[in-house]
Amino acid sequence: MTRPTGFSSPFMLGFDEIERTLERIGKTSDGYPPYNIERLDGDGIRITLAVAGFDRADLDVILDERQLVIHGRQAEDDGHVYIHRGIAARQFQRTFLLAESMEVGRASLDRGLLVIELMRPEASRTARRIEIGAGPAAPARKE
Image 1: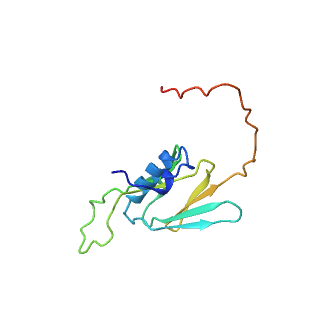
Image 2: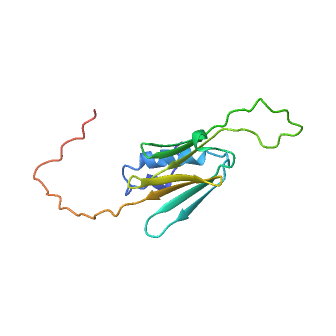
Image 3: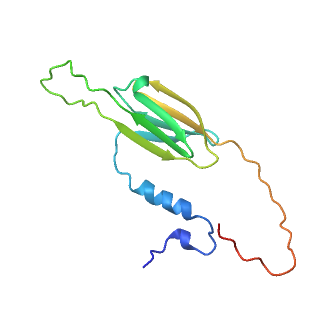
């Protein structure tokens, strides 16, 4: 049995990929590292991740298609003998899905906070007339 969704409306055509993306995002549950997302003036967005203990060399910020992927990895320090170890060297991957029009501006690391700024350039709105031809509609082709 098929589960009805908000995208199953007959007026919303071609949104299958968005539905799959939303399902994939809903499955992420790890809360590390903590982060904030703020709206900036205009259409800007700032993502701030708390990455205390990570150096620039330990972090990668990658834009792959429309996914902003932040990787963090710390090497184990075997030179110490710990009486108590509450700060673990851990790895993480945090992924944000960006709208098609979003662009990554810059990334900076200061006092344990990784800040990534995103912008949405102002898009020009266009409308065009679709000419109506005569005759029967051609069947859809499958490739």
